[in-house]
Image 1 (spheres, rainbow, N blue to C red):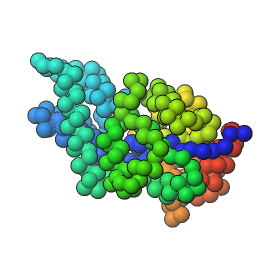
Image 2 (image 1 turned 60 degrees about the vertical axis):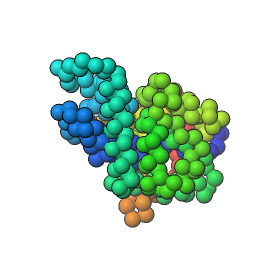
Image 3 (image 1 turned 45 degrees about the horizontal axis):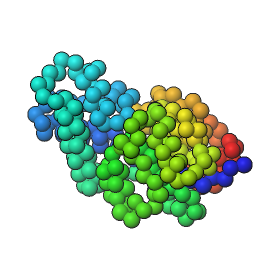
Length: 255
């Protein structure tokens, strides 16, 4: 029976509700900065989230939603420029404390660290976004808590491909059976499950209708002592929030 040794966290939508009031707003700021009349509202952004990766999302928008847009220059260069500007605006939001961690994230990370579990971040967002989020919520020293930060273009194929999880496992010299992953989206779950990783889902407003088949459990969030989490799919936790003991019990059932 494999022992639980590590927790692997997705970032956007999992560690923090960054999409609606973070990345979406930052994209719109980048568009305005370049004089583009594009506006990504909540509904449109929900559709765009089916594609992982900011640059890939921009191209999908142009290919599927703004097909009349004509650009006389290098479109790849424009997308790269927009994405860089968007990242600048997003980081500025975090530096101004505009975003916070989801319930239970900080508590569980601190508990896991104290229990000797290894930690990693596995995400399609850029490294700068990860650094800004962790530094401005957990503190700059917290970046050292994560043994591996697999982010952005470290692998060519992004989620739902398993490549970034395979990369993280190789970097940490871990077997998939020794880990639990935290994800929030259908694409994230497809990615983690394709890497044979047991996965806990904390869904959000954008992902409530996603397919989480194969996940260990689906929750609304990880919970706090004064803010119990709710099980959406799966057996009762037997506790009001996700703790290391709860995770060890879940892991034992599938290992």
